[in-house]
Image (cartoon, rainbow, N blue to C red):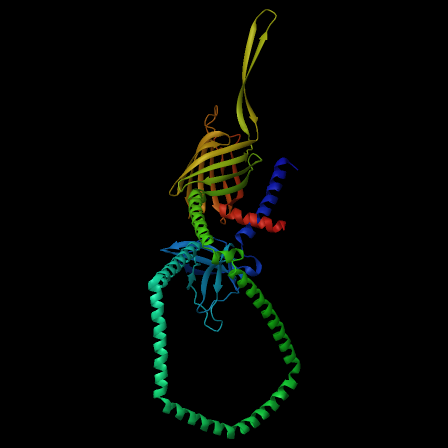
Amino acid sequence: MSPTARIGLFMIVALAILGVFIVKIEEIPIGSKSGRQRVQAAFPSVAGLDEKSPVRIAGVRIGIVERIALQGDTALVTLALDPDVSLHQGARAEVTSLGMLGDKYVELYPGSLSGPLLPPGTVLGGVSPLGFDKLLSSADAILSDIKVVTESLRKSMGGPQGEQRLDEIVENIRQLTGDVKAMVAANRGNVDQTMENFKAFSETLKVELPKLAEQLKALAGRADTVVAENRENLKGSIDNIKDLSARLKVAADNINDITGKMNRGEGSIGKLLNDDETVDNLNATLKSVDTGFKSLKETLGRSERWKLDLNLRTEALPDVDLSRTTFGLDLQTTDRRFFRIEIVDSPWGKQRETTRIVSTTFPDGRTEVVTTHEDKTTDSYTINAQVGYFYKDITLRAGVFESSGGVGIDANLLQKRLRLSLEAYELGRDEKPPHLRLEGRYYLTRNVFAYAGWDDPTWKARRSLFFGGGVMFRDDDAKYLLGTASAFGN
């Protein structure tokens, strides 16, 4: 097998493996999950929710977040759901997380199963979770209110004025009991009448009670029959009640033990409830943590806006029976600028001109000097190191192209699915025009692309049509790739 064939076979295997990863990362529906339905939901905020985040119903994963877009001042989220999921009137969505520090996902409430199905195109109402900052603000406001109340009580009940107010309260209670006593004396006749009515009621009850007892006796007989017929079930229920009461007793004992320790000031919570100094230290710590979070957020703000794209591509040059493979990354630091670093397995290597001088002395003393120039190829691996600038749908690049200086221009069409490129490098080639490369690239999916073009058309010995394919992983894809690799490792 020739080297070119071995390289081609290796790249086909590598692309197949990468294709499996792409299916995992992109969650491309295959088999029973094919033909996913799309539903949109509007949220006031989706902070922490990313594309490809899970969508769950009752904790069961039934789809993914396909797209997040800004519509006015709300976030419009497109959900890709399994085809067997049905939504009814009253369905809604909520952004939540797995535990306090878990990843965010969308919890879907499908509505009443007895209700009518949602018509196509309905936008679900979304609920956003309460942020940690808002919780801290609410807790701080509550503590402030409690402090104000305790300060008011201290001012109202402390000192001589407080004692006077307590004396007035006691005197008011004494007067109230006297008024009640006088009211009872004034209405004694009504009280006597009430007692007569109660006496008549007891006489009636004396007559009717035996009848009621007979009826209860008959009801008890029927109950005995029912119990006898369901004795086994009743025994199981009583055993369950005994077990539940035993567990409740253990839980009550634990709660009593915990509250006792809290009242005695034992443990962290006990100190927090009984020690003012601990409360002050906790407030100071929370303020320090809040300041640290704000500082850390501001420090990492710039790096969070960077975007990193990894790409691997390979191509065949059939006219010269060679191939080219490239692996590298694009680091986008602003909306207008990016840096590109790549390693290229070049079919021609790095060209370098060498000069050889041979001096010959003949027997008659005559000397002849012969100078020869040779083109020497070294290092099949070359480097791309470029800086690029975006201008609308045009990208301008300059820097190192396959270990030589050059420039390039890209035009993005069809909403950036089609890219046309022209590169010119090796500008100082002797007796040959610069190396030109024309390429057309089409993105089949978000990560997979195919391309073709014409390489070095001005040099007859090297010019060739080429075609190939590759994959690109963006910074958010890298996280899922690492997660998938970890799952395979386990």
